[in-house]
Amino acid sequence: MRALCSVLEPVLLVILFGYYPSMTIGPKEGWQVYSSAQDADGRCICTVVAPEQNLCSRDAKGRQLRQLLEKVQNMSQSIEVLNLRTQRDFQYVMKMENQMKGLRSKFRQIEADRKTLMTRNFQELKEKMDELQPLIPVLEQYKMDAKLISQFKEEIRNLSAALIGIQEEIGAYDYEELHQRVLGLETRLRNCMSKLTCGKLMQITGPVTIKTSGTRFGAWMTDPQASLGNNKVWYMDSYTNNKIVREFKSMDDFVSGVESRTYNLPFKWAGTNHVVYNGSLYYNKYQSNIIVKYGFDTGRILAQRALEYAGFHNVYPYTWGGFSDIDLMADELGLWAVYATNQNAGNIVISQLDPQTLEVLKTWNTEYSKRNAGESFMICGTLYITNSHLTGAKVYYAYSTKTSTYEYTDIPIHNQYFHMSMLDYNARDRSLYAWNNGHQVLFNVTLFHIIKTDDDS
Image (cartoon, rainbow, N blue to C red; front, side):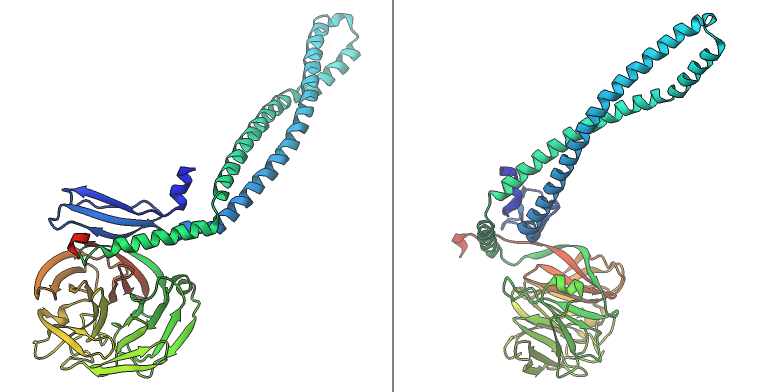
């Protein structure tokens, strides 16, 4: 019973490795990684994992188990009937076999003294014996088959007992009780995650291909500020000459192509570097340096503002072009714009934006050329830049807005489909969403965290 509970009830596991910061932590199949962590002195790594949600889908699993149990019981009944019939026939076969063996023995005696028999009678008897002779190996095979049926019956009986035991254990839990326990554990998980401050990117793994659709260039995203039950996906194909946004209620609907709604934006977009944040879409208006905020609930423009001095329309794009001059993104600290200006010699500029008014709150000038960057994304106030949009790309440069300092990095990213036209971090999922040559893919990220204690708050 305890083993079953460990499967049905989500738990939080914190795995600590002292003095082994380079060890890769791999959760078992069916578990998803939420975060990794280290203490202030960098002496341990912590990985928070929890079971995937589909492990808690009891109804479907229970129904499948009941159907399987019914099939096994039906098979058991059929085997029982066959076994009774086989046992009855087997007794007859045994009797027949003994008679044949006796006849053969008698025939040998007669054959030894065949001089006393007439030639015609002897030949008739020999012909009958020749007809019965092939039946002997058939009877031997029949005995073996009867033994196999008996073994099969015993295996069915054992399997049926095991399934009944599993069904009784599952039935011991009320679905609502399980649901409440899951919700409680999710709350505990979020409380645990709230004690993890922003972390430093250490590794990118994947990708996982979610879907193959659209052109070579595009964007897809979820809202990092959405509530727990809101898993909507937005899809924007192409980098120009389009203003149709497709909405899907869930990731499953997205994979299946079941749209819930479409939005016809008032202005066409430029590039693929859009972001959905707190229920609104932020994008770069075509052939301009204007940022537009569009509300999905209201279906209208909520704000728009020019990004001063920002290059646009392939003046300072990423290496792949595509009007990717202005990149809008969000992380744990808020909304950001990444672009380049003549004033900064075409190097990347980072600006934090007010999500309501689009006003620039603060700006940082880097020394990394925008045209030499493949893509970029923000995690915890640090901008990570890849050195290419093609195969062999890696995260090569990181700029921290907290310290206004940079460092060169060497974090590989597997460009599975050879051409990356969108790469964006989602703080809720702690994943990188990417548009990889007409494939919508997800990358997992591993972050180093400093764990906050109650004394630190």
